[in-house]
Length: 303
Image (cartoon, rainbow, N blue to C red; front, side, top):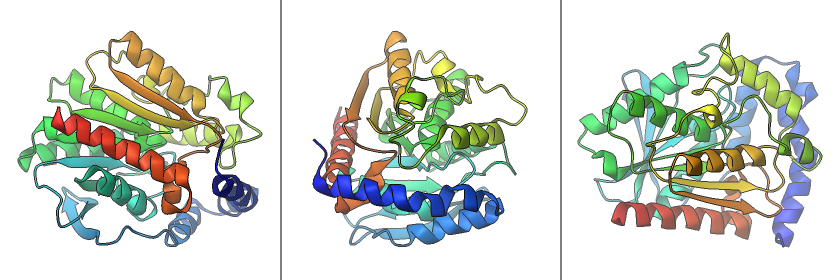
């Protein structure tokens, strides 16, 4: 059963989500919506003793998130969510830093280009650029893990597919939190969980999908990786909540990966919502989920 704290927080989210992404905000420009999300994220508390180092990677703003005992040879490349059109390093810094602390490694989180100003494939191009930069800095591919939530989860898969097709070395693993990997919205959970998802709604997700895809078909394998041939990708670690409309995305991704012979660990968290891990220390389910991610990263780098 979900904890009382998570039950209470989900109710609060349902009451407040409309002020961030509801109809009243739809009337405002995308820049104002982005600013509102950034402002809301400032209430999130960073882990103690996290070192934040800004940098530029071929014109892409990014941040190193590390701790004094973080090794220099291992890194998580974290790709933030936000439907490819929203959110930023600011909104996801706390989550990425928490994962880095649990895993005992440093994290790099880039500000990839957003739609609609920069539709597909701009985000993938930026993610590939940052990964290649890490290789140029001396990181071995076996010491790099991709991680991302929502659109960032889909971007992690798409980036790995591009690298595979270009015969480049692949990261050691892919970590996907509530991944958005079916932009056609074909899964059963889009209808089944529509009334319980406190954050997302089908209409909004479909509008955001079209904004990102531009003139391309929504079932393009790099836009919706559930329709891609996933053969040859590294192991997948997936977390998703049973109260989110993207539950089917995660389950379809896991099924497609297993069909392609990839090692997959999928866990559906009962009563959890979209990217509940961002709740950090406030609810026990977020703490446990982040610890599981950290344990997976540790095992991957050891083995």
